[in-house]
Length: 268
Image (cartoon, rainbow, N blue to C red; front, top):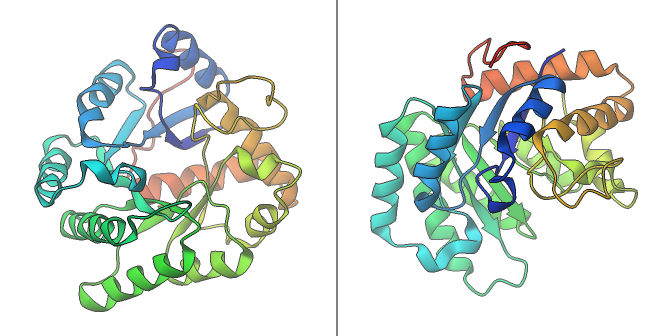
């Protein structure tokens, strides 16, 4: 059985002391590929070094919507240049909109549109963060589609309602579920996980955040725990773990153009 964790942040300080052990754990869990997201372009060199160290890591480059203090028009050119610089860059992001307690919505929209344009120009998917912004997100994407054309991508760590989920499925997006789906209170997320088509569903950890049940006592989430997300989603969808793993792995490879074999158990 193979799994792809489609959203990790293993460059964070909490992983620096034991990353080899963390990698051994994800390999034991059947995780054959990881997509490392990027919060801001200054992380690029560190993420690139992780990919040098672990052949199963591909990565993205972008600016997170909560980091608008770093946004300038020149940064778009920098993101584009970095994306072109390494063939292991498989996406632009994470980018998107986060309107929770936000007073910079116009700036977020400007930066998001610029990153959509980069993804479009480079034929790369986008990794989208969307919090309390589904209506505006839909409008921005629809406007971009009309003006430029469609961009592929994933609504990562999705927490929207089934109605909102359908909006982004209709726009051609994949939908990825994190440990949140395992939380008892996450009933609308669970309903969304049940309705997404087999060809559009992905799983992730968003580690080191959002540790899934049954590992909630562990403060730091890690890629190996994507197995628990997959188990829970498989049960929700009344399918086997093996079938869910095979489908989400195939979907991740299709969206991010990942190699068929990234890591084989028993090698390093």
